[in-house]
Amino acid sequence: MTIPYSVNQLPYKVDIKCPSCRQRAQFEFAAIQRIRNKEDVEYFKNNQSFEYKRFQDSCGHYWHGAIYYEGLHGHPLSAIHELPTGYDAAYWSHSKSAYTSKELNIGSVNCNFCSIRRKHSLQWPEEAYFQISYKNHILWAYNTESTNELNDYLISKSRDRSKYNWRYFLMHIPTVFKTQKAREPISKQLSKFQK
Ligand SMILES: [Zn+2]
Image 1 (cartoon, rainbow, N blue to C red):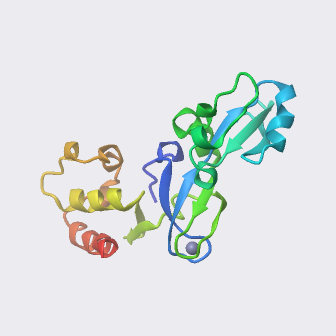
Image 2: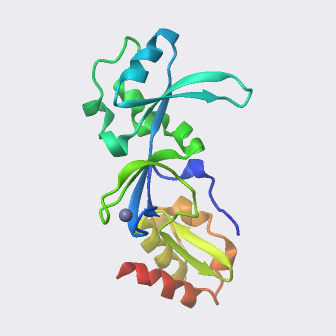
């Protein structure tokens, strides 16, 4: 199948099939920052808000990282206190550092059905909750809103993406799903999610 997106372009939160009960659950990427001073490693190892991990870059060099799971601990600005000098809790907000965690699929899952709340390594798009199959190709979306927009876009005559919030996502939908013949069977499947 064609994967229209790299994982780095995913939003910070996506809906997945719960690894425990298969109902709809939320996955949220963690945020990772480099621990710049070796003497600070102990602090991050001992602080329960963080997970310490030694990473390796593409050249084989090791670096010390501190992972913060916003999906488990809440917004970093309200949950992280008394950091060593030179660090700011805002560094662990999604907008600053999610890039690395997206590359590494690191995050957490939260399910309202079976109440699991734990660290999770994302397999995308295999775990996408909003996915359908058409002619052996998998069509997926991130969440309710992008699924609704996808359905609306595919059945529209104009295919005008400018009015949608998820226009960039819609831009990358493979051609197989956009043919005249595909309209009805795909819309039928996507509409099931709207019930
Ligand atoms: Zn569950």
